[in-house]
Length: 238
Ligand code: UDP
Image 1 (cartoon, rainbow, N blue to C red):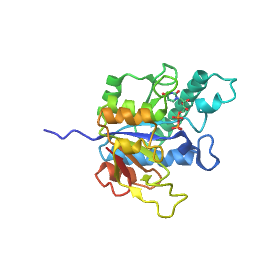
Image 2: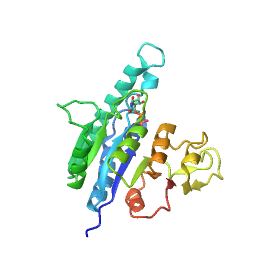
Image 3: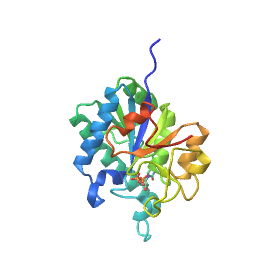
Image 4: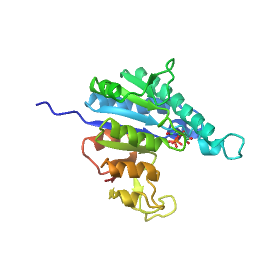
């Protein structure tokens, strides 16, 4: 029998797309990410993607002076993830991959609506699926949305692609002797000093035995190496 292909969900923060100025979308970063994802697809990996919206709007910040309600701010945040997802779709098509965006909130002129069976079919056909609009509900984060989608599509792992090599025992920007933790438990990952993701996401991953990998997205080939079993440059929560 043919071995089932690996399936992963990669989570990028919105800020990762912004580049130097911290806002908007830097197309050179989009292109870099797209070529990394392409190399994964070429290696026969099925790839789902979730992108945050922090480079455009976060609900909490939008609502901080009380003029915009938190729920509305959160919907604005979810819309930001759709903007990022459409941009990423373009970059992925630019590098020659097949990709679909599925939104948790129906917006049929822009993209498909999230339907898990349809997403699975796309993945089986070798298409990348970008899951947009978070969970579709306020008071959640895109980390939680990514964990939820990873579980729904039966991903082998969720990969949180960051600017750092993984999780450290203390802040590497402040302490020279900070060491990279190669493996940690879900409970350790929830500790305030570590906080790999928000508690909701970690609890969901823990309940469903989904490994969380934290790694550096800017090191070329790193994510594919991890998928191929080389965990030397990342942290794994399991
Ligand atoms: N958001 C939400 N529900 C979700 C996912 C996201 O309300 O299920 C909103 C929330 O306001 C959040 C914003 O969308 O601040 C952008 O997502 P996030 O902050 O997770 O983006 P990232 O930090 O990864 O860029």
